[in-house]
Amino acid sequence: MTIVLDFGLIVDTYFIVAIRPIMSQVLLTLFQQSGNAKGTLRERVCNTLRNAILDGALKEGQKLPSSRVLAADLQVSRITAEAAYAQLEAEGYLQRMMGRGTYVALQMNKPMPARKTTGQLRLSQRGSMIVKTGGCRDPESPLPFAAGTPDLRAFPLKVWKQITAQQLRTQGEKLLGYGDPQGYLPLREAVARYVGQTRGVNCDAQQVIVLTSSQQALQLIATLLIDNGDNVWMEEPGYSGARNAFISAGASLIPVSVDKCGLLPERTLPVPRLTYLTPSHQYPTGVPLSLERRLALLEMAHRTRSWIIEDDYDSEFHYDGQPMPSMQGLDRHGNVPYIVTFSKALFPSLRLAYLIVPAALVAAFTKARTVYDGHCAQLTQAVTAEFILQGYFASHIRYMRQLYRSRRDWLLLQIEQNLSHFATPQPAGGGLQLAIWLPVGQEKELTRQAQKLGVITPGLAAQYQTATALRDGWLLGFSALTPGEITQAVVQLGKIRLT
Image (cartoon, rainbow, N blue to C red; front, side, top):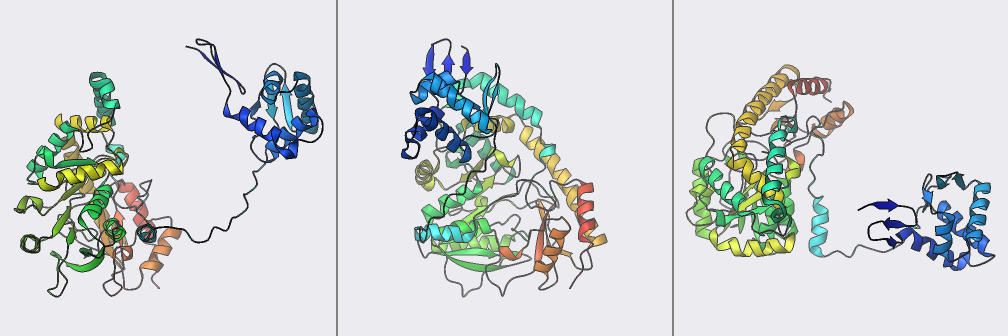
């Protein structure tokens, strides 16, 4: 089939069908407007084209329809169209090229629309709360030291392409249709086996729900498990994305302090409906939750019939000693939904994560998921499943674990050599970023100086809810940076002067 494109006409030479594009209707509408309805037909055509150019609807270099097509579109004679084109060419609006056509010769900036006074935004209370949180946005480029980004240069893209081609070849159209809202079954089966072997998670494929992100998992949890005014325990400092999700559901957030052994709740705190935890590698400090406190929190959840949300966001990257098994695996009463994202282990634009819920919640979460976005792309799920089943995922994780550990160690060395006069690293056995404590009251000023030096230093202040608990610091992402890039950025930070 051959398609011939022209401004005023799209001709399918196989079906011999002529279809007028939208621009034809636009010009006809302008031609018929009262402002252009005065004068001769030639003057009206000139005014129509002249106004379209001056308003920016027609851009410099844009090809116009032939005089024959323009005449047919505006229902005037071809002589009138030719005369209008000649007039506008003489005025400098158009340029006519022999054998090539007629083009716009002027570039006009489209005028700004008049500001309209619409009053206050008519958002719901929940909508207003979501806007106030500031949202959740990750950096698009792994600049030093944007936190939490994997090194995409080390991703086995060739293997990924091969598996993608294989899946398209073997499954074809099957992967192009609507999918199971709970997720592609082979991927759910692969996930259940993997987390059972590596994290001690106790589940089967029927408890796995494949989602687009851990943030979507948090929004689903907030929607289904929290009522307006319910108490939610949050680590202090803690992940702002979870905080935003729970705030949007109308929860009453209770900040709970974190020490070297993780979450440390006081006896006077109100009983929570839900507790959000990052027990393997607390975000952002990096400390693990001790076994004693894990067991105590699980017992409290059972006693109070509350939920514990375990966000295992980067547990694959543990560098020192053996990581603790998941809290979900210790749970005997079905109180621990478990969240993991593939964004850190594979790549962010994959847009895949999974939520493992107690069997009693599967139906409710699956139905709620259909309200959000239906399902994830089947092709990416199928490719990810094969990537896991063929052993590439485990191999990739082993390699990246070694790579990231060497980069963490290099960052620590560079900080010791260049920044020890004002920066104190928080010991952390894993992860993709490192918490750095700064002198009291200096975070804002030191961050400003770092920005002037061309270095991004995400602050820790934003991860706190209460001013009295706040500690000044940075969260430096190192995983996507080569040793040379780390050294260059730290040397720049070494030029900072304390006030």
